[in-house]
Length: 263
Image (cartoon, rainbow, N blue to C red; front, side, top):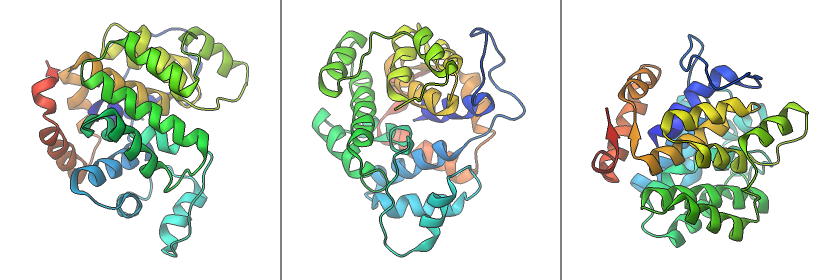
């Protein structure tokens, strides 16, 4: 989960940027957590403590109401009327990684991703995007090769994962709509040699850089099992104590420290 949060924080300063290459300053004065981080933590709180997904979202958003949510989403959170919120945006896939880390099987990852997603994104393509992300994180965290992940996701979700980050950069630069951030996030993950390169490639793509980097960051953490200590330190200084506490509990629960090398 740290990888997702770090990706969000770094990417926050590069939304809709058109970078010439991947050689750029990662952390900037404007780097901050966004709604991606808050909603990821809401998911983590749910799977860790068995809380209702919707209630956990409401709780975390009300604690951190200024993280850049859509206006209608924030109104829904504050309304407390029990009405469904149906979004066609990317909010589910970007918050789903904790399920992949804590799931005990691929089936559980897929099931919980669906249950979590329908709270706000009860749309088939958004459910699929969240499931693809969750199951990819699960597979990466539990020893699958990138070839295995690519094969499974391509077969079950019909994404063209042969497309490179260079393709996605041109796709976004040309003004074409990005239907889901999951395929470009996976492309960055597949091409990278380590966590840092994965995040750099994700942000280089452009568009919703923090969301793409958040998904890529989760995958890279799960697969490479190494996050530079300096990244964690600089990210944590931008979080609140309640966020830090939940991250620590989450890591302990899924034995992150045993599987992830931090140096």
